[in-house]
Length: 311
Image 1 (cartoon, helix red, strand yellow):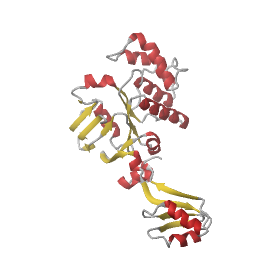
Image 2 (cartoon, helix red, strand yellow; image 1 turned 90 degrees about the vertical axis):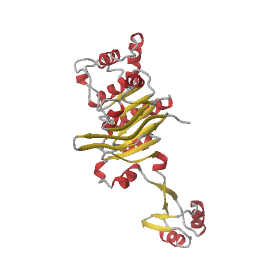
Image 3 (cartoon, helix red, strand yellow; image 1 turned 135 degrees about the vertical axis):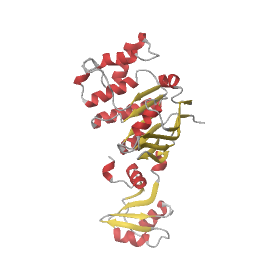
Image 4 (cartoon, one colour; image 1 turned 180 degrees about the vertical axis):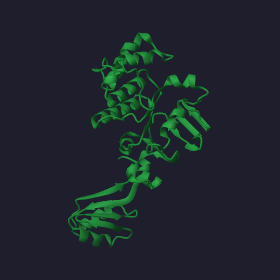
């Protein structure tokens, strides 16, 4: 049975009259690359801060690595790496020296392996050649990479990352995604907060969608993106294809434009539909099942404007 690494029950946080997180039930399992998805201001960062004991919950329960937070924080946090609300380092000190200071402050820091671990962490985030440059001279993307390097200085059972690709160009975002997949394959569980739907869709195996502090959905990404039952049919013989589909019980045309038509097959096997079309002389170039994107799922759940999220 897969163990639960993070669990919350009825987690709620209020700041005066403002409810930032309301009755949130999360479950992150061992080995997950778990996407925590929602627009800016949806309560993601507040939730992560509560998981790490940086903010106290108004009500509800939190378990991290099978132990209660924040009561067992001293035992839990050495096994958790985190990057929340962006990195904070000394501006006039080099990235390498900043990591050394950060590591020395840790309760389980091993001075004998520090230099090697820092070099490895910098290489993993592609900062190995700039580690001696002052932090104040770093670009926003480099600062984000250094914060991730700090989370990687020691092996952790869990990584909690808040928008780790902020400030990165597309190439850098891809490198970080590949690194996270590599970390999970090596046995680390990753809880990744993001407002970038495509980022979650590409790499996460499970995801939760939050909106205005409330949990809207939580499931395997493959289930959230389940087929809609609609198919896209590419053919230069659209009129003939419509005629054939009208003779197949359950199939119905949804819309068509030029050489593409969309049809709902209502459980009719697509190979049977393809065979019927071809047997009637319809040239089928492609018959493709349609799946929802996370953007579709998100907008269906929240009825938000498309500008609330980025694809």
